[in-house]
Every structure is written in C-alpha cells, then in structure tokens.
Length: 79
Image (cartoon, rainbow, N blue to C red; front, side):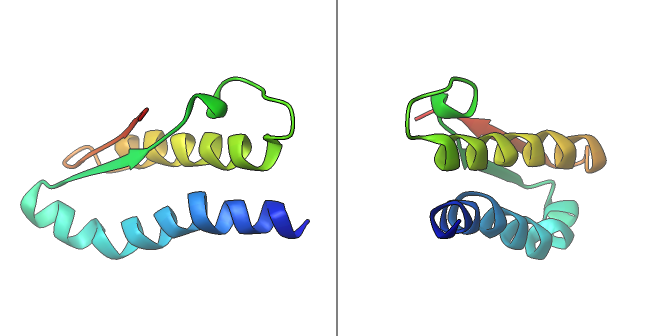
C-alpha cells in the first residue's frame, strides 16, 4: 500500500494541491497548466499499476478542471 500511496502523492495529490492554489491566478490571467502524463495512464504494464493508475487519475483531474474552469487551459502531455 505504501508504494501506491507514494505514487498518488507524487503524481496526483501534488497536482491537486498545485492547481487548487493556482485557480484564482489562472482565472485572473487566463493562465495555463500543463501536467506531464504517461502512456502508462492508458495502457497496462506489468508491475506499473500504482504509477499508471496515478497518472490516469491525474489525466482525469485535468479533464475535470478544464470542464469546470473553461477560462483557463489545463492539459496533459505525454513526454
């Protein structure tokens, strides 16, 4: 469980914290946020469950924020 928690803390909850703090400034400036995703978010790889699912959650977060905050641009990109 610790590995999963660590992956979600780094790849998902850090984005939640960052975007939550940035939303007021993004609204003011019509700013942009780019989150770095991974192919592991949409394809299963052996032993990559924690990493891939945390990136998939991050992608969904970006899509949700983009729908809720259309004045800003929030996207994910593959490296």
